[in-house]
Image (cartoon, rainbow, N blue to C red; front, side, top):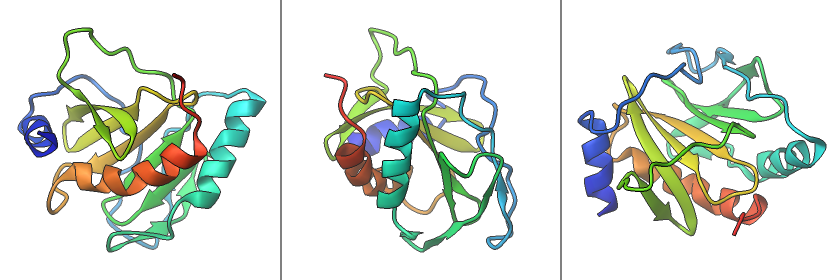
Length: 159
């Protein structure tokens, strides 16, 4: 089912206007310019810092990259970049949606927005967003699966 949902997303099944989380720079050594998450309370900043220490140096074959704009709550890997932003605004999930699913114990809401698929947690006290290039080899949800473990262990559930 996860593959089907993600493939539906890649074909434009989930669409909404969106400001990209990162610049589309293709140079893997250049800093990624990001849209910073909104200001956060000290507890959220502390949670994001704990998550940041648990995130991998590489994500599949993508190496971690420097981030310009919000390096304390944003991490990027590869080119075009996969971008994780911690402490984003919570998403409003329509009650009749089939765009929400669980990956490795973390519930995510997925929306295709042009060249990216944006996954946002819906069951964490501090929302986390992962933007994955839609052209990623394989399934963009596989990238999120790799990040679900540190998100699930470092960001407390809201349930």
